Image (cartoon, rainbow, N blue to C red; front, side, top):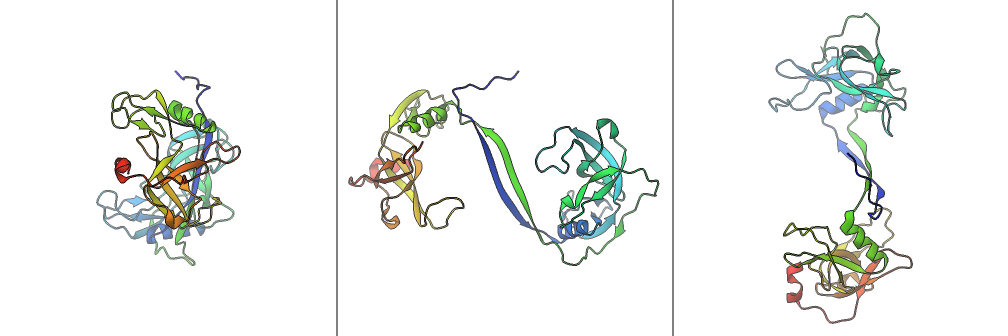
Length: 320
């Protein structure tokens, strides 16, 4: 049974995306360069098993593997699942089957897409062949997909291969993306809504009586639910800080600048915020600060010194 989302709880789409760059060892380098050249390579283990895709270490013994072999471009479907709704980045834009294919000469299966008109056109044991991409660059996408193979040619055997090609692929960049709907939950919804009114609200633990900002809905020490709201601040004390010297992409803040943990008055947990209105090399532990709001802002843009004397270390040492 599914429960309808509560309308009073905030929700928003969230995309986490970054390019993942990695170098390739000799085995993966040969495998991807081979795909660029329409050659499928595997690696043979000391027991004679041929692994495709190849790996650099034996999954059973952890021994280093370097014995490359060429396998066929045709194979057999070992299992499959129908994908009725392709998503962004999938091999095909129309419904297709995800298949595990054991290429001729291999002992393990390769995961890829099979281009067939419907689930009735795919079955375990089906013979398929590689459809190569028109433009190949040394990536798994050089295999555009698999397609049914009705030929009666004899299945290929694994044959030794040196794994040497011109202009070897030595590294790859893989775009990683996580696209989902995020909800901060009830406690942080109340916290965010209060910030929109230029108030900072935490929640008090009914057991240890500590006030947590931002609230999480439960006390991290006692493990009990927190429901009593407590307004804290607006001023607070810098407990620790760091100087940022590297400019972040899409962040219009000149370096160097300071990010600090700030214990707001009345809170028992420090939150973080940017410190401005003072030279970066004059920020210090114990500095008293207050929030600065921009026009229409839903949260403080930064914190600036209040002009008060620095707080005594004993008043915030437990919050460092």
